[in-house]
Image (cartoon, rainbow, N blue to C red):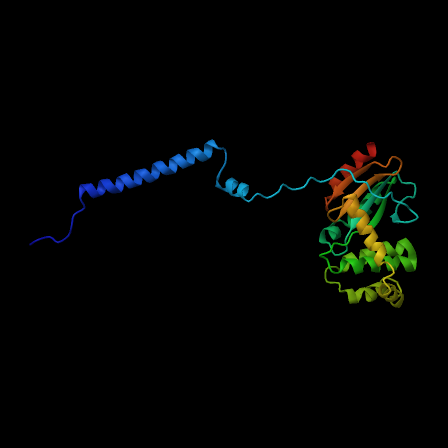
Length: 241
């Protein structure tokens, strides 16, 4: 009986082997070329995106000199160094950083803390929240300002702007007066002016804290919600200067 199956010829086997060998040589050549260039596919893809490098974090900043009679000020009036913090009440990183200045004030007797408003445009509650905290100071001064700032940060991000009056009442403030202050836009321009001042000085993120030597005007920038130990180390170095 005749066998209908076609056996694999020697020539066919050779063709398959030659194709496989050619593929392997091509792969190895490409690999060598890649290694010689000191790069890899991922790096090449990253280079092809042409993304600009990250901007350098400033180390100094020419801000308006802190003033105990104009700024919201905590700590000794004759402090050698003032921590000027540019903050946004809707910023989660500002919320994270918020306890740090208090710890610093508890440990250092020659350091004060000042808060300036820097509401970011993409945080819809930040401007009104900043105005509300200013309105708290309008009622009962700096003590009320910092106490209400604590309350606002604690209530964020779920706090609605319609609830600012009730939150004020829970913290010993007059709800009607605070709402009237907000409705009148009494502190709208002040908040915007502080934002403009910070922007002009070079603030680009929140929180940004500027260490300010009152005697010399020398500054040192701490950008972001750095851990307490990092802030303390920077402050210690700055105090020696």
